[in-house]
Image (cartoon, rainbow, N blue to C red):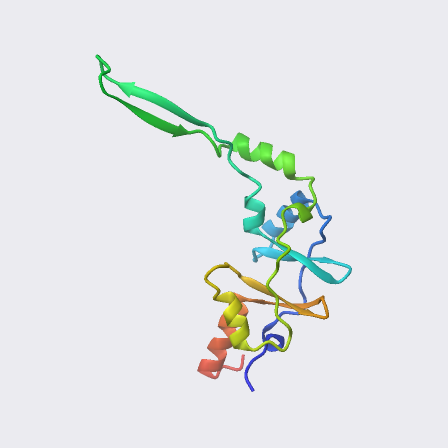
Length: 167
């Protein structure tokens, strides 16, 4: 019998609530070594929020300035586009505008999950999905979050299995 999600998962999972403010979650995330949190309400998994979800709220405004440039007699001129977005002011304004909003507004609700009995191959299938960029898989039993499996957890387990290292 091979490895299962139960063998791979971390059971002490840090989570956030759907009503936690974006600013709080950004602060919490900046102090951790991982890139996302399961979103849990009443013990049930209701979503996941990742760095990607949070970065998406900082959409640069379209502030492209087109400047024609040419030499006399201006028979042929070139137009240069200068992108003025993503300056510090844009980021600060977006943060101020969004920091107090609940995380439910940016979280992903269609979360790929596995059960504790899922095989290593099932877990690898989710992590290796070419259409999704999944770094962590919540492990759910009867709708409740019981653990999480990360890519790093899988790599460590495969390495231990191949090298016979029990540590």
